[in-house]
Length: 329
Image (cartoon, rainbow, N blue to C red; front, side, top):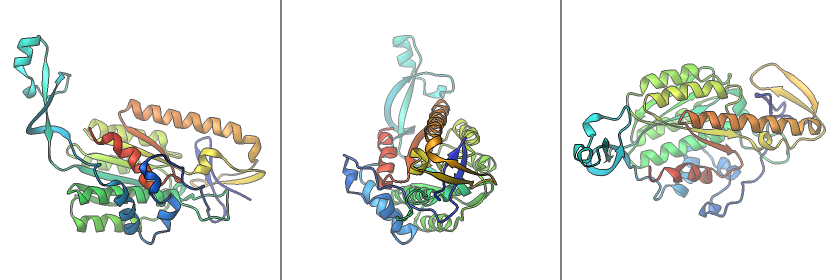
């Protein structure tokens, strides 16, 4: 029997050893030349995977132009409640009878924190085609997190990392340097899959730790925890963090390619069901789509940068889609 997927927002996964996604989605961008997700995961060691992907996307992507207090003037903006009144341009007020705030370019390094979901549902790597090796969601998420950390540290930025399930995993404080990168990669590599998706306590502790603006990148499948995850992400946004949510799903979960009688097991609970896959496919896909749309809408309403990524997407292409819109922020 095949196994896998999501029923009414509850993850159900394989009985036997997980197997494969389809091959990477073709692209008309320069990212066509990048190795696909399966090839990246076949590389030995997270350091090698991170360096391989980073080499494909690093050049020219990161010119950190964040608004701050440097001496270089950038632009005016209309004053809004919460803006620093010390930056009001009184000459502009005298001329236009309207409050404008001066904005400047800050040249200091970026502070970032990678947060990776390692709950049981992230262990799924495929159940549709048993003849090909699969890419587990957790390994894909670790690769994205490790690659971003590697890219940022190579550019003299500072980075920290944390894994979570229903308990906090190893947390690396935000620092820079090669030694920091080694520690981050070791922590990601050691983080074992286990437990349920419950980010509340983990991200609440992170929110308390962040004392000033930082980029927080969360990689998770959101299964059995999508609504809960948005609450602590909102708290991070309210503290001034730039929050990005990389929603990682397997192609089996987004296409439901199963036929015949299929047994489903809940990877984060004790439920089990045997169903006619073809008979429930349409209803499943409708519900999955409605859930994903609601998660995306809720994220956008809370100011969270949302990206849906399937594990058959070459990691370099996924990161390009995430990073390119940020080049001029």
